[in-house]
Length: 171
Image (cartoon, rainbow, N blue to C red):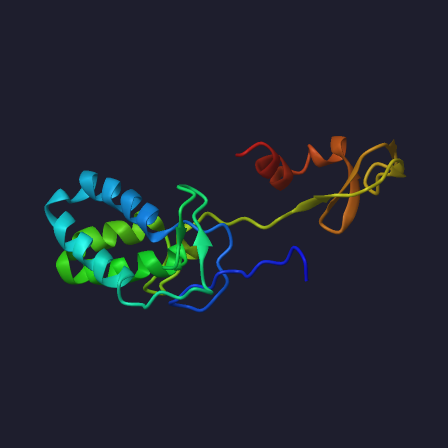
């Protein structure tokens, strides 16, 4: 078919890679990060990068163009898999820096999850498509109703709801 192109596949997880960043660009970013955190291990990380990127044979039918440098590469890896492999290598070199990488890149390679650390609040209202309607609380006609707690309410009545006020005004 005309216009269809093959989608590159990550060599590690075998998932499609969309808007890919090549391993060289990822390594340059990782190197900049390491310069701030732990410049003393840069050589070991470079060796890990070289070992990882040269561990797969080139494949003519699995090619990507990097969205950053615009270079074409046969070494297709998604950022998640690349950083995960570097992270595991880094753990053997310097555990403290590996933990910082885990936190800074926030990929949750250890499977611990970060949801417990994120502030959570329920979604309390949704915008409702209504050009005209009656507020179920005050009975007034309104051009803009919102659903809150299973009831359609005007913004005037919603302002009186404490939870709505906190969500709407960041408090």
